[in-house]
Image (tube, rainbow, N blue to C red; front, side, top):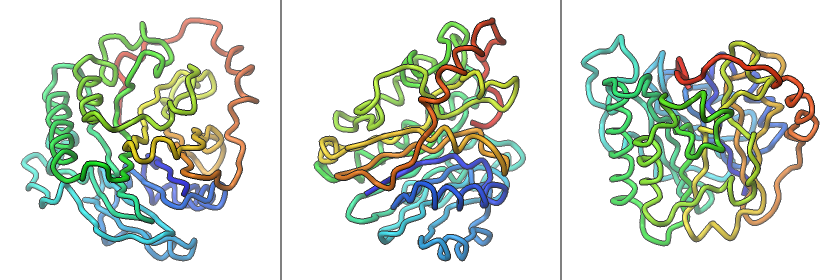
Length: 303
């Protein structure tokens, strides 16, 4: 089974890119974040035409999560099994994560998939940052309560956390900002509850591999990025991960791409082959990173 996660940064705006990528990579399951759609506007017919069932949990202009599967979808859970709380500040994003569409889960092909879109946090010490940590605490409690010990589970999505210094382009430039702070990293590790494993790191130890790059200042071409999108697997799946990759090519070209790239893992056997573009890009990236650039301590905007 091939499982992927991708913050699409507006499913309506990127639908042509997404359908192109479904044909390119042929995942069995695709977890999507930041769809920015209400449920009634989810493009179910487009995905059905591509051979996928789609379930969606959204609120409109912000947030939104979805699962597309060609191996069945059942046992759907949204927002930790609770109704979304009424928003007290509907014109402000990120401050009320339990009033925002950030979590959907379903069983696909015998595996429990959990798709999440963590709050950005904006600035360390801000109310948005504290709300982010509270949301991580709620996710951890739900995992402990709802996931059976020994069950095959994949927890994936945009966590807005770079777990280690190797997961950012320059730890010194990012120091003091969100996504890399001690409390955020502790909250991310707390999701492991002794069992979840970072599937990408099972296959890749090298630095310089990221899933998000700011649109500004040519940061993608210089590879000034962060690895903040993850697929975490429970112990029964750990020994079955045979391949993992970040598809750098999907972050390029037209139509205008998301600022995130898809992350892909294969379970039991390799899926449809594609060239993610890292080998051919490494030399060019090295040449572009020869002079100091601006500080990324504030990750800025929605990631």
